[in-house]
Length: 341
Image (cartoon, rainbow, N blue to C red; front, side, top):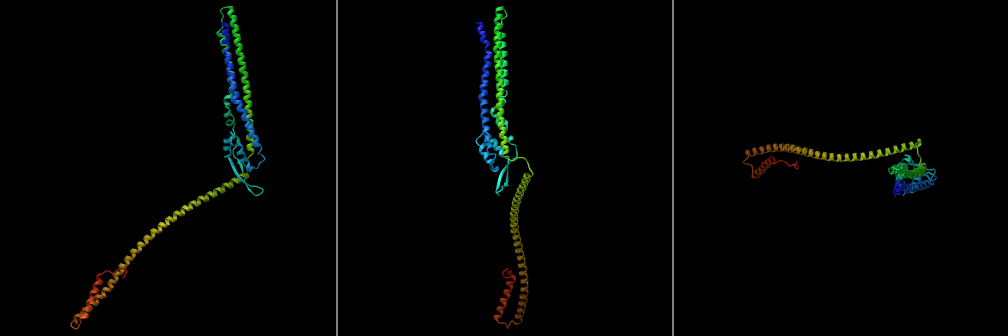
């Protein structure tokens, strides 16, 4: 009974090793091999579809590639790459102006293996899986040896024979488990590298085909065209800025001129008003002096004549003299208005 129980205990380490290996292999085939196969097939399909556009017109290649990459897992990578394409206009043989695109950044900078293959497939984990399986096999071997040595009984020759038989059977099972683990790690390593290389080859071929769809590099003609375009754009932009500045300056000058004219008109009107008032006062005073002196002289003469000829003067003459004297006083006392002047 004790021997059968010890045999069961000896089978625990190999059983655990086999269980871990079976689960690891299942996870490897379901979470790595199957997605890697689908990825390789998708890259191959996209590569073959892109290859059909090699003989198409240069000005329609970008639109065609937009349709190919749309709704695929490479759509965002393609959008980032398409933003780096430089638009270049050229005149066709029939005289029509067409647009073609020139690549300024290599395609491999966007269609990278780390973003397209490593991250979706979790390559960083599965490429270390063979080492993990080998370690599990080694642990199972040492566990079987420890279980066999812990149940070794050297008290009697019969117990020694039984203990040696249990130890050897335990070591045998542990080595079987270890050999299975090492074999599984080798198979996993081979399949992992094979699947990864297949995906990597398809991706590199896709990058090569997409890169050939657009002109790359720098040539003198292209640099001259870019320089002319940049000069034209700079001249146009400078002209627009100059027009805006002149409009603002003209607007400011008109506003300042209007304000200055209004202020000048007010100042001129006020100056003319003051000048007219001073001139009117001067003319008024001058006329008053010129009129008052003759009237006073005339009044004195008339008065003297009246006194000398008082008896012969009639009443009508007296009335006239009175009116003249009264008018003289009123004219000398009352100031002259501007209308009278």
